[in-house]
Image 1 (cartoon, rainbow, N blue to C red):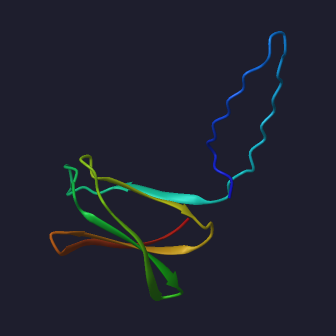
Image 2 (cartoon, one colour; image 1 turned 90 degrees about the vertical axis):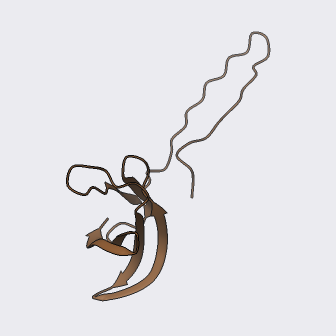
Length: 102
């Protein structure tokens, strides 16, 4: 797949003009981002795990990340229209579990 970001370097000759049109393919993938809090405060270093699902059945672990200093996390790119399961843990204690469709 084509990246949404690319670098191009042009060095025209003296008197030469370069006209460029870049038309990127629309990316249909999505992502999930969020913030883990304990009410008012951000929870840093919580483990957020993203699972593939099949109906009510949890499938394989796709990715896991630790929340940053602000309790934030992100996953992507993800296939549109798919159902995912997210589980959040802090110090081996499950804080939250939720299903989400991208």
